[in-house]
Every structure is written in structure tokens, then in C-alpha cells.
Length: 144
Image (cartoon, rainbow, N blue to C red):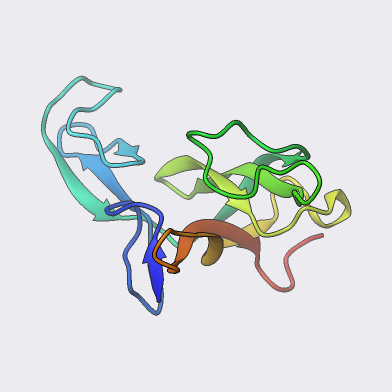
């Protein structure tokens, strides 16, 4: 069975999962994750919205060593750890999202390339469930 890494971050289960964010009803600012107050205009009038599935890679790097656990969930053994891409994806007219990338090869990543949200395995919980999280993958045919 698959379970989300945490509730309320992305729609799940879903054939086309989307990140769940907020939109300020006063100034139109988008936020991720969900927030009850707007950091731009300080209004406390927001609504939950599903964000775009596609955006462009704004910047990126490769995580080449295990992050500290906690809060990181996943393989932290330096002997078996596999590097992964991390970046910011700009969702048009909405927000820049810090995200895991499905690609860890620098030759395949370019700022400005089109990306799409996908669900990827992260770890296995104590009950044997596959814990999944969101990531962004290059759109086929995008500049690379």
C-alpha cells in the first residue's frame, strides 16, 4: 500500500496529483504549503487551492550526501545513499516550490526547462507501506 509522506501537501490518491497551497483573497499571492496568513500583505483571508502541475526549473543542485535525520526520511547510510536532484520549480503565476527532482544527472538539468509534478517512493514505514512524496520530472522533449 502507498501512503503520502504527510497529509495535506498533495492530493492523494489521484491520477493527476497536485500540490495543495493557499491563495490570498486580498492580494492574490500564492503560498506553499498551505498558510492561513499572507506573508505579502499580512491578510488572514486565504483559501486552499490546487497548484499547477507544470512549471519551469528556476534553479537546482544535487544532494550528494545524506541529509540529517530527523527531519529527513529516507536512506541516510552513506554507504548506500543515492544522490538526488533538488531545485526550485516556478509554477506560472503562482509560486516557486522547493522540491526533489527525479533527475540527479547535471547533464540532464537546465534552468528554464519544463517540469511536471510526479509522485515518487521515499521510504517504507514501520507497517511496510511505501511512503511516497512529490517530485518534479523533466517534461519529455523539454530543453536538456
